[in-house]
Image (cartoon, rainbow, N blue to C red):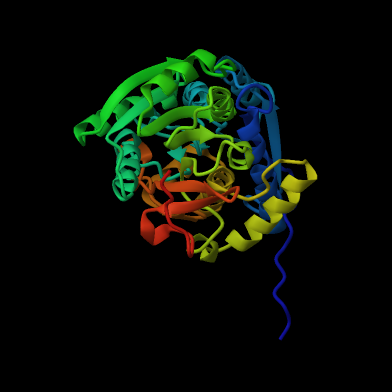
Length: 382
């Protein structure tokens, strides 16, 4: 029986524009998104492209600055004349880009906007299953996990960056913890991109909480834990919101650190369509650019999901018109690496699917809820 040949995309490229924080304090994590985006562009072009045309990815550096993201999306739409856009990494740049997208009526799919209630633009869609109220669902998944250990924490400190989504989640963590009887000894904030955690570390050591929750981004968690080590103090049980996954996992201070996730490269997630291929391809590409941690994770998969949504919606709608693409997404579900996503809930969000992972032997492993834990892995309390 002859093999079925799929026609290669031909004709004028479909230009898809976006920014990532290739420099600045978000660069460690944005590098992961860049690899995943490039993987997906090649994958889509290896099929039938978008509407039979090849995809050209126009990527610019927003330098981890929302105001730069705003200017660059304006440029992408009005000067570069891209056909479609994709969202950047992190809440502040996403919100800046979303304002531009709304002005021009562009669909914007994004993977990491942590404050869903601010996604009021009807043509903005999440590619990661945060759910519509992560300030409630995230903290309670964490508190459920902590309630399962032999000595559940009775006290905690909430420390957070002033980055919008981190503050939002920190306030939620404080409220939910107090509602469940965990005493919040301190609520502290620091400037985004902070490098000096000495004074904060001294206050944490003095408070000595049973549980430390850190609303961090990028390398902030590494710097905090280093500052604590210099004081001969290690937090008992500690959670980090959005750290650079590789540096924290490989750090001598990162052992047993907890973090949020939506999947990791173990079962049951590796049985999802394409995951084994994505994991192998990501590892190869990450090694080539000397990323310290070459294992695929939820950050990379957020960008994969973005492109899966775009490819599915454009080809199913049969159009590059933003109105038609948005209408199709609102009325349908899309199969992604995160499972089947729907967009008919508040702020175009669907179901929440937060998980907790932990560094064990310098690798991130899902530990909670138990039914999603990696085979043979369980939460280790400090």
